[in-house]
Image (cartoon, rainbow, N blue to C red; front, top):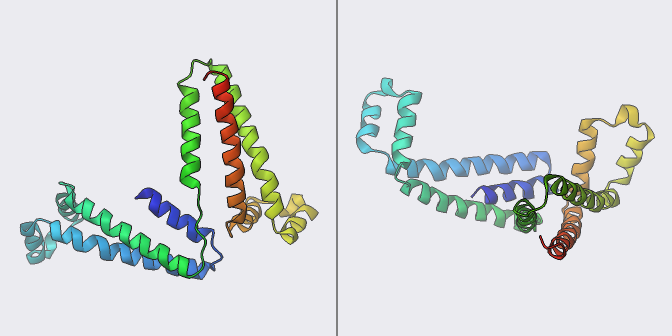
Length: 213
């Protein structure tokens, strides 16, 4: 579920939608989540507790409210139902984004799995601590050498020229972050980086095999 939500947010953030359009989508998602969660929580809430709170509003406190929610979800049934409904809702929003021409950011999970597998492989090996550190440094350098040329290729030229004309006063955390965001927002740079990083990780994997790791 976390991955589905994360992927939906990444897709929205890297889209060409305006900030107002993004905000409107997030508000609609929040409204949909509430409409999904609360009916299920009420359905599974202990009826006597709900009736007691309804008859005695003065008893409604953060503590009693929390207690009702905890009782609703304690056997896991409500959570399972909520998860199914949330998945359906996220799929609905993904369909809407597709209709609006917002590209899907692919390859993230595959990339993470490759990286995790390599780290696990290194950590479980008989390599010394210094050898592992050297290997991680080499992998990091290889990934950086892959990413930066692609970022430079897709960076908005006017923005880059503006910042480089007076780096001392113009290059700030905010301007740098905006430059990177503008570079990757249409997803093209990310797709190219993804392909190159997979190639780098495959080379690392092959090298580890050759070294008997």
